[in-house]
Amino acid sequence: MDWTWFHRFGSPPHFYRIAGTLIPWFAWLAALCGLAGLIGGLGLAPPDYQQGDGYRIIYVHVPAAVLSTMAYAAMATAAGVGLIWRMNVAHAVAASCAAIGASFTFLALVTGSLWGRPMWGTYWEWDPRLTSELVMLFLYLGYMGLRGAIDDTARADRASAVLALVGVINLPIIHYSVDWWNSLHQGHTLLKFAKPSMPPSMLVPLLLLMLGFVLYFAAIVLVRARGEVLRRERNARWIAELLGAPS
Amino acid sequence: MKVPSAAVVSPGKAGWRLVQRDLRLGFRRPGEWLQPLVFFLVVTTLFPLATSPELSRLRDMAPGALWVAALLSSLLALELLFREDGQDGTLEQLAVSGLPLPWLLLAKTCVHWLLTGLPLVLAGPLVATALGAPYASIPGVFAALLLGSSALSLIGAVGAALTLGLRRGGVLLALLVLPLAVPVLIFGARATSLAMAQDPMTAPMYLLGAIAVLSATLAPLAAAAAVRISLE
Amino acid sequence: MMQWLAMGGYWMYVWPSYLLTFLVLVLNVGFAQRSAQRARQEALRRTQSAAAQQGRS
Image (cartoon, rainbow over all chains, first blue to last red):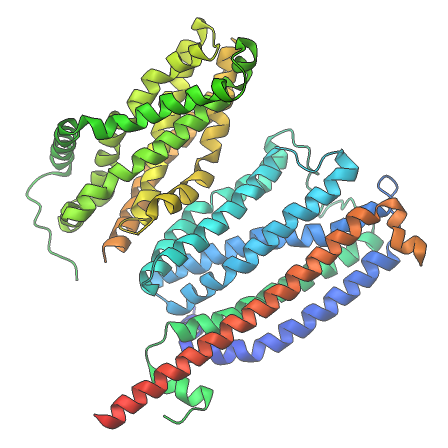
């Protein structure tokens, strides 16, 4: 297989340019999906038989939760690539995932808590899924703390990459916690393709919002990553050319 | 640039010599290594002082108190693992020696556990009885602490390697290690409470064992990578 | 309209969730753009000083 595309991505000026063209596309598509999903979720979808209109929190809670784990996976993957192939662009991407990933994790926890209060009767429960999601928030904070504590960017990149990879073990725990333990949290509903438990009128807005969140995540990461790539670049030529300064 | 292997000693022998060296150095300054134990005893004493001396209530929170104190004590002890050798260049010598660094770090972590973890394992059951645990539960508490403290030392070694030489690294070390140590805390406390209730504790013990084995095999690898990164 | 806002009695939980989400999304856009802009300015400053040094030497 031809791997030139992979190494081309690793070239900072290439990445900078490609990311620049992709960002507006991702941003606008994210807004579109988000709007469509919101209209469907808040307006068109019928109230739930058991939870009434309260279930509509699902439309922000589930995308946030899914993205929180997806962001960590992306961060760990980028960190791994950066560590193995010594690619600055990969490290830049990993660094860009942290803040947004932590935000989504926080959002998932808070919206879940607000949903839990009317439905389960409690704002918080120390059950496996909630606890492991909270642990992931701490992992994100630790990652950002480690980066902040190391002044040398190269050492910060590589040390935080090791940390991100070590923390990957939390991801299967989060995902399978509802299987392995008696959890208060809802079991798998979305990944059962054979027989989805939600009617289309409720499911479609959810899928739209998830897609919107993914596109939003991609846009944010690319915006940050462009800056991070600039911070790691020594070769002034392409920067001066691209940013239009007299060189 | 990779230094050509100058090792004339087998890894096994080198590991053993490292263990002997670290033990000898550790015994030269026993005060340092006893501090985590003292901290453990003090912290567990705080619980009955802060809540209630009533034995039945203490018994309820004994597993949690025991394991939180053990976790915090092991965090404190982690400072000692790489500090000296990192500062005086021994760690760097180990890294370029041509010997497998994960193996050497495993040896160092074992000695560190002997000096800081083992005292906790021995003191733990006594503390548990002071908090209301029945005498029959002592073997169970001992076993759970044995597995849990080993895992904590190993996991902590990764954090210590990542924060090597950083100013105010102690707080950051806690922030990094605590999330990774949560499963040990959960299963250890569960095993202890089952032991105290005289119920079978096989399930959490299996999980603790699995975590201990997993850390013993993977943590040295991660720690070695982290040490090399920190020394660059 | 009032019925929709009431969300079947769950408005206390639904609307704060949505508002918080919106806030988080907006803040992240702001912070990301600010970080990228700062990086651009620093990079420009670096290349300009490097070019000046080259011109001098």
